Length: 121
Length: 313
Image (cartoon, rainbow over all chains, first blue to last red; front, side):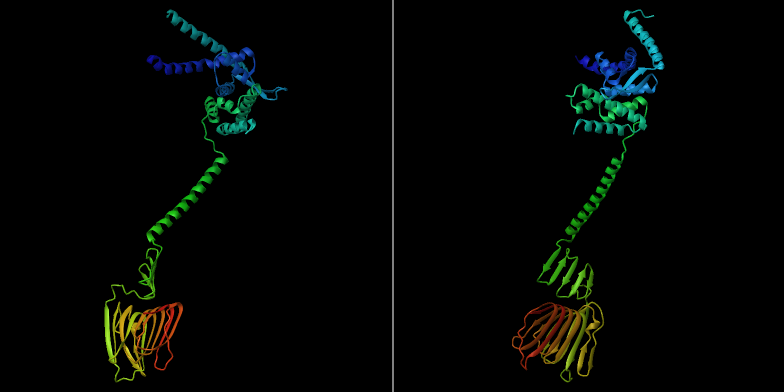
């Protein structure tokens, strides 16, 4: 019991670090899958995947990915709703980055899988 | 406050927290956050907008995340409203400091100089501000600290110059004794042996000169400073005492006497066996009532005081 209490903060910190690592990857994957999405839609998709991300974190991240040129944003106003929505989609640079990320993630999973199976080279 | 106002207030705060970013970027962020909140509200209007904004995070926290993602250093908001607030605070602080200082100084002065007014009827003195200022009815002077304006200060230890003298008037035709003085405390008695005598204690000066001219004998006490004299005037010899500051005490006058004092006090102890014709005038001050008779044998006592008192003893 005491051991669990000691481990809890360490695990939480590790989870945050791991989540940071694949969050951008997941985000780009979701946008690629749906071609174009606006902020609230992305948030809902993430939540449905139990990637509970606060909007106060999501929007700054989208903003930075746009600055980095991985995403492109377009403002659109739906006639019925009236609210302007900022739709995000992948740029060519984003597509290329996502491919590299997928490769890296696959390699990482393989490493972990190999480690777990005891087939370490 | 309605939803829109709450939202706009939040967004204006967020805009200020994002001031490290160019205006265009800030506007885009604000528009996106506004759109997000309105979208949520449209989907479920039952949720309190304050709750939605709390879920989003404080304006500063949200701004910090944007700036962190962009690698831009946070600037603390500095708006005109802040400047006005600081100027107002500085002004208020300065005024409060001056008022507090004045109050403290006043209380300290009251404490230091208390009591403010103290009346000593017996000594005939009125003191102000813990005796920092003293007005002496007896001496006819005003003391401010160690500085004396007018009158006498007979409590001074420097009053150690003695002078005395006498003059036989039996063989001289003296019609009048004149005694001028500047600052003096005179006690006038009547002598029955025909001798005019005086004994003075003064702070400094020379022995008073006695002069005789055309039946008028003059004792120049005006050469003495802060003189305290006892005078004996032969009964039946007229006397005239004129001075600026001080006090004159007439003890049972036995001749016609005239006293003129600008500032001071005159005390008269009439001889109950004699009749007097009093003529007492005080311009500024107080005077007692004197029983006066207009008979040929009555002694004439004329007293004129500009500022002060004429008292009966």
